[in-house]
Image 1 (tube, rainbow, N blue to C red):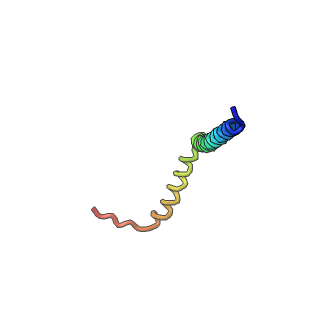
Image 2: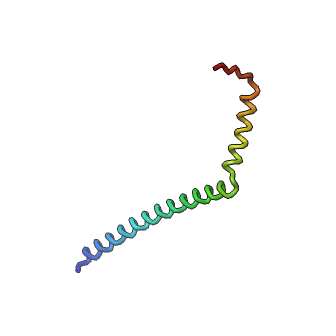
Image 3: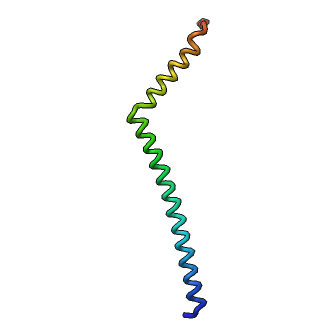
Length: 74
């Protein structure tokens, strides 16, 4: 095996290693995002925040629209 062949093999291995590192980095980022989303959804579920938010918004909407006279005719 000549020097040039060894150098070509070494460069090919380095490219493969760099590609693998990039893929692992992307997978790590995806896992972090999924973990964060799962954590936020668990907190919302555990503390029942969705129902509390809807209850609060229901009161606010009723304050806005119930103070106006409604003319309902069927």
